Length: 453
Image (cartoon, rainbow, N blue to C red; front, side, top):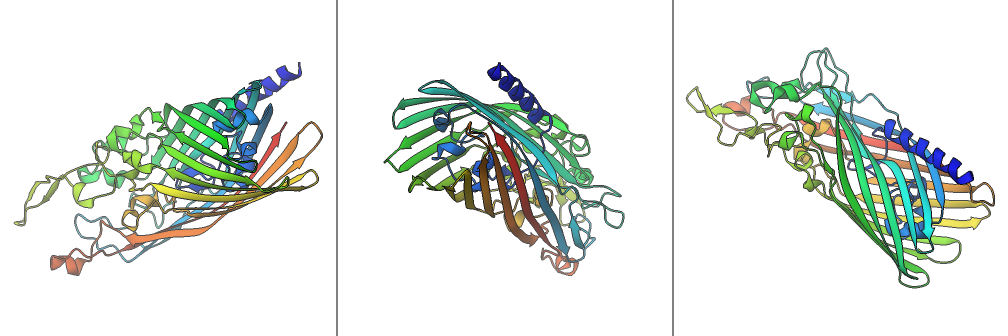
């Protein structure tokens, strides 16, 4: 009866997690900083520490975790803004922006998480987890009657959310070594608003599938492999590899995303060590690689000279552009993101009766280059550093516990030129000198609470 009740609770939370998916989590690019409250308290470090593995951790660790259920919710507060310096040139064929600073609305998001692990026997386990993999949201109100990209009275921004359902099997091949595999079912949604100016003059392959088409949905599959090994009595090593998650296309935005609306989810891999210094202290260090260049719609750079179907012939007329590559085409412009390396360290202290304390720090490369700031007004995933604190409180001898994590990401920014506007006087002399600078900024705070039993 007790197992049946837990199963019903698990199923209900699983459904709730899928229905209420939002883009709500501190981010490495647009991926979540960490998964699960305990792991988040250590800034995502712990691929080799089995106790923090329930929510999208190392699948090989789950066989050591025992029977466990956990559900939680996080509150995410990202503060995004952009600043344009310099007046637009207003020359034909340019794409100037209104000067000033605009902050994004929609500042608070919520996301539930859920995980359950069952031991099948002494050497194997099965696990289910639902969580938000990542996302991005911007919502810029019109200023002086015009949206960010010049459309009258237009809200401008994007809304991307991703939810994963993980089904994991772990097997302990010997006392010191275990392996795990995870099947991933993914759901994502996307909406773009206020991008109509990119549909003018042939810049999009299909202007009807560029913007303002509401939320579109996509579904896909992938898998993850994991290994956990005990090198010595105190030192363990962990590793995982997650494949690209192959998604159906965003058909309603085939004129925006490269490859006719394709938006697969990049592959990642992680390696790390955990050192259990004594019965109270554990230290963990991870290296994670996120391969954003797997995805053309994320990584293709913007080439302003390729967006125009016709170019001046020097005699007052126009010729076809031999390098014409509109938005939505196979090699169409994306956000210009690069692969990133993430370095994570964390510590856990359990020397206080019924309490466990955690802290962590994460640093990752900047995925956005200064040449790509124009399009990344929509997706300012500029965060590089995260500082985290966490704790757990045991509630009874059965192992029921409350878990807390706090994440702070100090403001980070990228500043570059508007590649589609030029100084008018210099242009008359045949010199294409950028006329405007764009700076995109973000800071983040996240609080997560979970209950395990």
